[in-house]
Image (cartoon, rainbow, N blue to C red; front, side):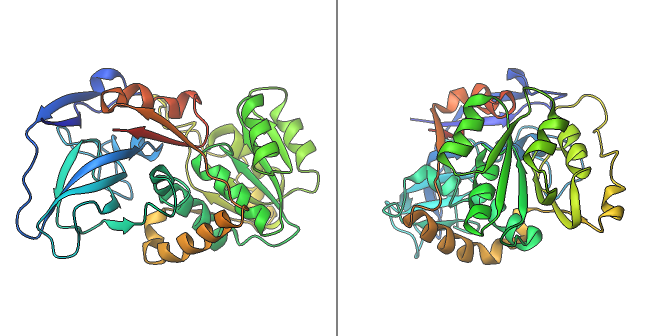
Length: 331
C-alpha cells in the first residue's frame, strides 16, 4: 500500500493541462504522539483551486511547486494517537489531493455521518454552502419581496444562494448555461426564473427576467454578466463578489466592470467575500441549513466522480460546465 498524492508541478497559464500536476506514490505516513492518520474519502473540487495555483497576492498563500494540491476533504481516522479522536471518526478539513495524511487535528472538525451523506459536508454543509449563506445573509441582507439575481446558479454556491433567498421571501432569478441547468434551478430548486447565458440575448433576457430591477446580485462569474447586472440595479442594491470563474483561466488581463458608475447612481454597494472570514460562525450556518434540509426547503446535489488519478480531468469539469451542483471526487 502507498499514498497517492497529486502535486503541483508547474504554474498553469490559462486552463491547467495534465502536466500541471504530478501523480506520486509515496509511503503512508505514520502518526506521531498526539496525531491521527486520516484516509481521504472524498475531495472537494472548487473554482478557488485555480486561483491557488497562481503565484499572486491573494487571501491565502499559493500552493508551492512540488506541494500537494490544496483541497477540502472528508476523511476517516484509521489510526489514532490523539486523545480526542478515535478510529472511525469522520473529519472535515483541508487534507489536499492525497489518500493519506497525518495531523494533530488543528483545522479539522468532526461530523456525524448519520446526519447526511459524506459528500454533503463538502457542499451544502461545507465551504460552498457556508459561502452562499454568509455572502447572501451578511452582505446581501435580503428582504422579502426583493429581486435576487444569482450567476452560476446551478453550481455548488449559486444553487444554495437561490434557495436561501427563496426561503427569505425573495423573487429569485438564476443565470446558468444550457436548458438542462435552467430547468433544474426552476423546476427542482424553486427559482422564479432562469436566464440561459448560452442562448439568446443576455441583455434582453436579464431585462425581461428582472423587470423591476435587481436588489441583490450574487456574482460567481464576473466578466460580461457582472457588467450587465450593474445596469439593472435598484436604489441601494447590494452586490456580492464571490468569484469570477469566467476570468480564472484568462491569458489576457482580467476584464473589469465598465458600468461601475451604476454603483454611484444607485447608491449601491459591491463587496468581496471570502468564507474563511466567517469561520467562527460556521456552526450557526450548519445548524440553520441542516434544519432547512430536514424541512425539505433546501435541496443538496453532489456530482461525484471516482478515482484520485482522475483528478485533472474531473477538475476541468468546473470550467466546461459538465457538472451539476457540487463537484466531488471519491477516492
